[in-house]
Length: 222
Image (cartoon, rainbow, N blue to C red):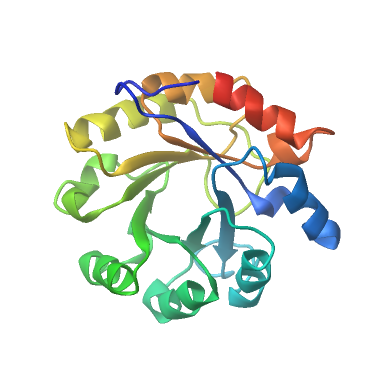
């Protein structure tokens, strides 16, 4: 099993439904349900990023089809307006963007009050060290290895060092988990897991394959 640089830490694979066939979404879920650890759902509002994707109704529909944890990545401005709706729709973890939250600690507290895990994502141009004053309150740090907004982008190589820096920021604590999203393939996955990543989000590499479950298994095996 692939491990991060902390002994006993099993890497989780979270297929991104952004790359699934939404016309056959139930079939896409069946294809990954047995091998995936989480399901990753990208919420985009057309304001924080130039794309619009899903809302709570889709999360609720996915919740009915799987028992896997639902990991909702909120690429939206004013995420505090939508936390309750996504949590009630079935989200187990909610990740907001550092760049979108002038009152970040308040939003993290809101997510925790709703009983969900709370994560913060940082864009490629944002240093992970910006989270130094709130890292103790986080369940997850999401390192974006592409600029958010669209699937299928090429991996940003400097994300590997950023993962190492996130691991140093965490120190000896068990949390936050270090998640990486963007351009994750069978070739790039080992780069970030060896740097210490705990959760890999992969979309095109999984759902673009004729055998998504096999790709997930290969990522697990490193």
